[in-house]
Amino acid sequence: MSIWRRSLIYLKTHKLRCILLMFTLTVIASGMMLGLVIWKGSQDGMQELQKAYGNSFTVKAIIPQNAEDKNLWEQTGDIPGFEQYRYKGSIVDDELIDKVMEVEGVTDVCKEAKSYLAYFPEVDLIDALLARLAELERETGEYSSDDPRIQNQISEKQNILQGCNNSELLSYFRTNTLELVEGRAIREGDKYQILISDELAEKNQLKVGDQIRVEQLSLPLTYTKRITDLNDLTVVATEYLTIAGIFHANVAQYTNEYTVEEQVIGNYMFMDIDGLTEMERISKKDLGEAIDPEYTATFFIDDPARMDEIIEEIKEIPEITWSDYELKVDTSMYESALKPLENVSKITTFLIVFLIAVCIVLLILVLRIWIGARKKEVGILLSIGETKGRICGQMFLEGGILLLGALILAVGITMWSGNRLGNGLLEHMNRQEEQNSKQEVMDFPTDINALEAYNEQFEIKSEAEAVEEISCQPDIEELAAASALLYVVLGAAVWLETRKILGNGARELLG
Image 1 (cartoon, rainbow, N blue to C red):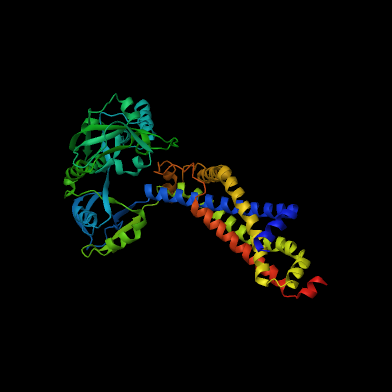
Image 2 (image 1 turned 90 degrees about the vertical axis):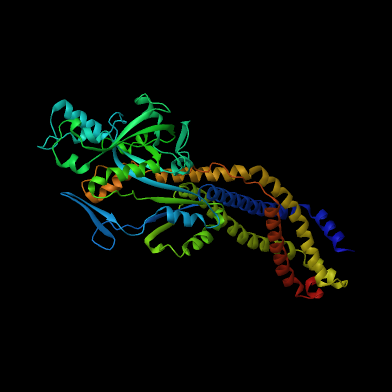
């Protein structure tokens, strides 16, 4: 009689024992498949995040915060209290950008810089600390010092201009933290174009195409002489910026009574970098020399998987001294969204390893009972001349048939529950990460060293939205991997247990 026929007869005549073994195999196979598909879904989610947000790196010059090194700094002006120096070391400039852009795989660049304390005499910013202080001074006539200067009335009209060559590549807009709702983005070749928020546009009755006046004040003259009338301000540069687009903020911002105007998201302003650079040069001429702002360049590549390879090639550019620069892969945008997926991946990896261990132990125990109860049957088969190999093959075939049925059931269970379990686990991890990211509001610091940490709680961070759904459906690869692994474990367990029995002769087994 063939082992196929003997196997089928045994399975038919020992239904209860077979159902118990098949149930055990179904539980193990279902757990393993669910672990595999959820793990694969989390890995796919991480890859999608990296493709969308992990395709960039930043380059900025390492500039010392003091001017003691005469090889790096040259004094260009000597106005009392406002000494001006020019940095002579390595900087991010068009020459460096052009060389990096020549590397294969680098597809685009976003050049950024900031102009601090640009003065907008005709624009009412979203009110914050400085506006309240200025109003208090106007109402009471009381000043914060014995020298009555209207510095708060100046500061409430001052703001930071953030320059770029392509606003669509800014992290704020790439992550949808800010969304352009009217007009167009800042693009290469623009001159004196600006983006403002819908909140600021509504407050000042501004629309796309309108112009707003911006002035650069002489800081030394403004802050060293007494000014009690805004008409006495020393203006060194005046430009008119055309509103190219209006954006909306899609995030809420924490503020308190100490938040200053430039930190309020409704006051954010973005303009073309060529216009900003020219304004900076003009405004600083009275300090001895026209000086460009400090640039940062964010480069984009076509394939995130080649990031390390491309960076290595960039670092081999002979004309650039890379020790003078900080070159960093930009992961800040998607780190918060990546953590829940990483946690899901870790949990499912542990689950798979645990189930493999349980599978081996459980199968050995079940098969020990399964095969151990068949000593007389094995003895009879040996006595009629059946080979040990065929007996072992029959045991494996019986288990293999049951395992096939268990795998079919496991596929159905996985298809039905994979997305439910995977996305339920991801949702839990997202909630946990959201709770962990919440920080208690800090009190106003009494220590100057704590001021930076205090100010960080007002900053708007450009972060990718958390991944809310992953695909946890089995495909051929997962099915093949789980099936092959289970059959290997089954074969090993059958071999271990049959070897113990087959080590005896027919007489011992029948006796």
